[in-house]
Length: 171
Image: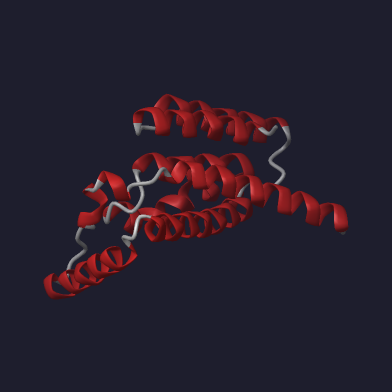
């Protein structure tokens, strides 16, 4: 098991239990990432590691502002970027979004809430266009509509990591 998956497992466990990802976990993961990158001679380069930590903040800023992602989710992506570089972090993020979307669709269909959720999203977009500013999504306050994106990040990371490993073995 990679260092990243160990940190992600602890983060998912904490997120599900307390709805928080401890900053000490993120900090120790980033320090471990810097240490491991130093020991391996920065295989992707120092800029790849730094960009891997900063890019998630730029990508996820709008999702955080509208309460689509929590701060812990963004920090976990920074941790993944530090430990694995930009390419794997981006692949992980894309796969995680797909996993979360599929899970959310199945969940909403199962609970017969899909139409209500779609209507609420349309009202939210209309309200933002009328106000001409970014507004938090009101549905994020409903506990029945919340999900732990950290779990999707964990599965997205595993898929990305395995996919990259398989592709390296093929070539």
